[in-house]
Image 1 (tube, rainbow over the protein chains, first blue to last red):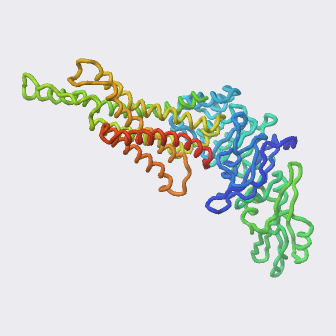
Image 2 (cartoon, each protein chain N blue to C red; image 1 turned 60 degrees about the vertical axis):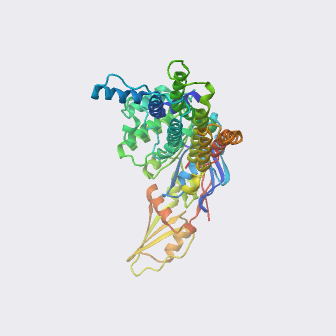
Image 3 (tube, chains in turn cyan, blue; image 1 turned 135 degrees about the vertical axis):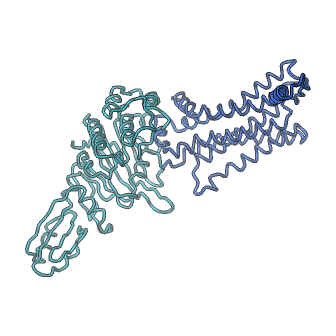
Length: 316
Length: 238
C-alpha cells in the first residue's frame, strides 16, 4: 500500500534525548505520512523505544519537538490520545484483571469503542474473557493488547516491538490481525521490530536508527535495492578495492572478494572492473541481510538516506 | 472517566484497608475490655471462679497505647498503599498503559490520590469512630467522655496522610539514586513524630507547640498535594 502524502500522522524535528550525558536519540527528524506503515528498525539500544516514548509523550525530549496527528506530542490532549493506540514493549497489562474486566475498564474511555472488533480479535486468539491476564502466555497477552488497541478504532497505531518473544505461529497471527487493521484506509502504523521478515511483509517505508541517529528513512523496496553485495572472483591475489563512498564492508576469502555497497552505482562498477577480476556478480539482498550489513558497517562512513514517501534521496 | 479510574484503584487495593481495619479494630476492642473478658473467661473456665473483678476501662482516647498503635498501623498502611499505587505500576510496567488513556495525567494522579487517602483514613478511622460512639453512650464505662477528647487521636490519624503523600511523591518523582529518591520521607516522618509527641502529651507542651505541629501537618500535606502532580507531569515514564 503506497503512502499518501496529503498529511503527516507523525512528525519530529530535532528530537533529542540524553541519558547521563549520552545522547540516546540525537536530532531525530521524522515525517510519517498518513496511511503509511512505517517499520522503525535498529539494533538493541539504538534508541527505538526512547524515540517512540518521546513520540507518545511518555518521555520528555531534551531538544526538539514532535507532533502526533497535528498535536504536540509532549502534551497530547485526551482527544488526540483517543485517536492514537500505543502498545508498549512486553505488552504490559493489569495482571489482576480478567480480559472482560480490562475491556470494561478500557471502553469507558472511548466513545468509539467497537465491541465486535474486540470480540473478533479475542476469538481469533481463542481466548476466554474470564481468564486472568496473569494466567496468559506472552502470546495471548499480545493478542489482548492488540484487541484493546484496535477496538477504539484509532487512526494511528504505534507499537514498540510487539512481536518480541512470540513464537512463529503467534507472531503470524499478530501480524495478520495488524494487516486487517491496516487494510482500512487512512490508518497509519508505526512499529519497531527485530523481525525483519515481518517488516518486509507489511512496511511501506522503513527508518533505521543507529546509535540514536536516524540513518535511513526511505521506502522499504528502495532500501533493499540500495544495498547490494558485489562478489568478485580473481585468478591471482586480489588488490584491495579503492576507498569509495558507500562501501560498507570488504571481505577477502582467498581469490574471492565480497563487498557490501550502499547505493550501488556506475562508479562502483568501474572501480570493480579496474581491478580486473575474472567475474563480477551483483547479488540483491533481502531486508534482513541488508539491515545486518548496513548496521554493522563502519557507521561514520555510511551514507544517509532521506526523502519523502515517493522517492528516496541518497546523500553523502 | 474519573469514576472508572477510581474504581480501578479501589478494586486493586480494597483489601489493604480491610487488613488495617481488622488490626485497628482489635486494638480498639482490647481497649474496650475484650481482652480482659477473654482472660477472665479463660480463668473462670479453668479455675472455676464464681466471679471476676470488674474491668477498669481506661479513659477513652486518653490512652498512649492506642495512640501509638494508631500511629504505627496508620504509617504502615500509608506506606503500603502509596507504594502499591506508584512502585506497583512501575514494577508491572503499566504506567505507559495507564498514562496513554485519553485523560489528563493530572486526572489519573488525582484519582489515585483520592482513593488512596480515602482508604487510608477509612482503614484506621472507622474503628476509631466505632470506639467514639461506644464511649459516648452512657453506661458503657465509668469515665467521663466529651467529644473534644477525640481530638488528639484525630490529629495523629490525620497526620498519617503526610506519610502517605510523602511515599507517593517518592514513587512518582525522578531521582538519580535511591537515597535522594526517598528524601521526602524524612520531613514527613519528622512531622508525624512531632504531631505524635504533641498529641500524646495532650496540651502539656503548650498551645504554641500544638498549633505549630498542626500547621506543619496541614502545610506539608498541601505542599505534597501540589508537588505530586508537578512531579508526575515532569518525569519520564521510560
